[in-house]
Image (cartoon, rainbow, N blue to C red; front, side):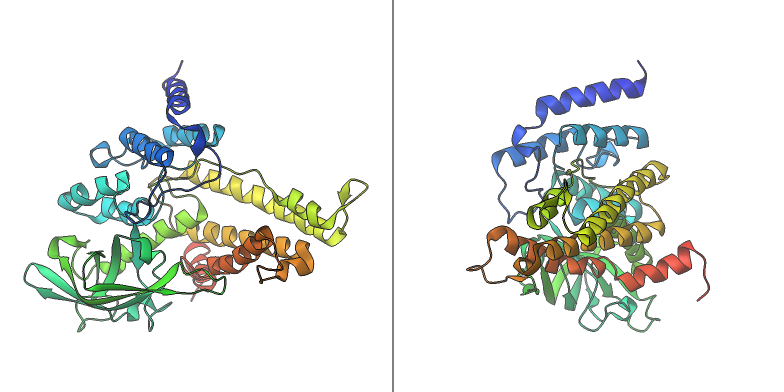
Length: 394
């Protein structure tokens, strides 16, 4: 038996013995928030996987990982899928800021923050966009002023997703206002439990409020929690965006990668509303649409797997923009298909006339319109693909 065959056999046996039945299949995946209470099995699954180093399997052992190589990592994901196990931990801690600290942080910063991220001790928000600085992110005005051993942070960030549940936030701030706009930016880590941080939820068209505006009023950041060096935030921040986009694309092996792959429910969903004729979905247009969607979904999964297998480092480069965008567009196409299949029933917003499944589908359709905005807009991704992947001129 080869080393990889031995690793697979040991992994399979350990997962069978240690993965509680209740965390196999759909359900809650922790983001590490101290404000969200987990049920006993979910908490136990997280604890066991963290002790094994498998919440961040490719990270060094000294920082909470297992130092799996690419082949071992792929085996772990395959075995998690085989038992339909949920990812034990997700979120911006293991997928965005953790890999960034691993690449740009000092030894002290890695020792302080990475084990916390690996254990799920605190959820993270992302402080990039501002009310006056969105796609032109380098125009940000949230500032950090040195005050002895601390920085004082003042300003606002918008679209800080899940901030109401988060314990920490990584923030791009202006540390040198006299320098050119790309050169005077730094990345800092802010504790959100302090009085100088206030979160204001923003209600979306779907009725949910996961997006927020976060305000800083003399919020305190220790000098040692500035990542990557003073005024080097543009370089650090761009690298973090690659981790973000690769996560959206399902190809980030730097942190947690989902093990569970749900079997497509779309054919049954469409058939339920449209009916059958001679064993086929009755509506020809929807039948063709469904076929194209299923083929695109399968192609997307193959592309994600190929991208993971071809990675030479912990995060992909600019191709993550292409995979992220196609993934978002295909998900939105599926939402459109579900609403179209429901017909007029798919447009009922009043809970007194729509059943819960119909209302949930409509809310999902509305919420996931944000997928081509979150993590970099569709237009930004197309621009990156044109310049950095295809090499087209400006």
